[in-house]
Structure formats: structure tokens, C-alpha cells
Image (cartoon, rainbow, N blue to C red; front, top):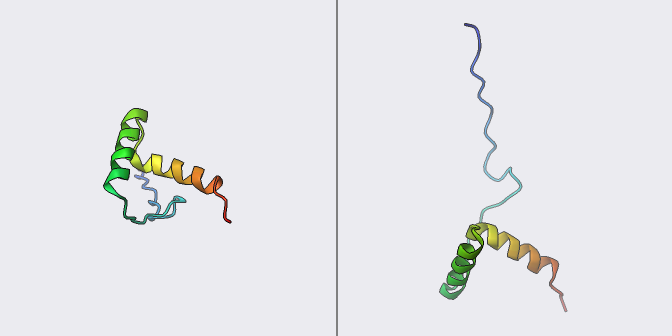
Length: 62
């Protein structure tokens, strides 16, 4: 059998259009995120992205 096993290259971290960084968040905010995550069946990461996108699109600099 001459069929070759094809293994595609894995994208390097960060090449998926996302960047990883850390932030400090209060315990109260984490608890609120946990409740929201449970209520919506979404991950905290997904919720943070949704909330950040909304905030950026709806903020006004004065």
C-alpha cells in the first residue's frame, strides 16, 4: 500500500485571529461572570468577548 499519511501543519498560537493576555478581575466580577455563564451555557471566555465587543462598539469618548 503506497498511501501516505497526511498530517497538516498546525497553526501557531495567535494565528487564529485571537490573542491571549491576562487581566486582573475582582472576585465580584468573576462571580457575576460565573452566574451569567451558567445561565447562558457559554464559557466565561466567550462571554468576555461578547461583552468587550459590545462595550467597545457602544462607548463614547468625551
